Image (cartoon, rainbow, N blue to C red):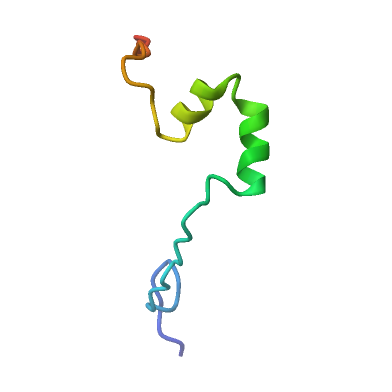
Length: 62
């Protein structure tokens, strides 16, 4: 007689995820920015460097 097992994975070992920092100047990132961004300000804003004094986006009410 086999013991009953609960649902889910059979092992309880936790796997460590390797977090790799993204390079915003890598060729792949630059190609993505070329197609996504319309100008230098949009590119920097999407990368996390907003222009000081730039107008804030208004959130839409649902």
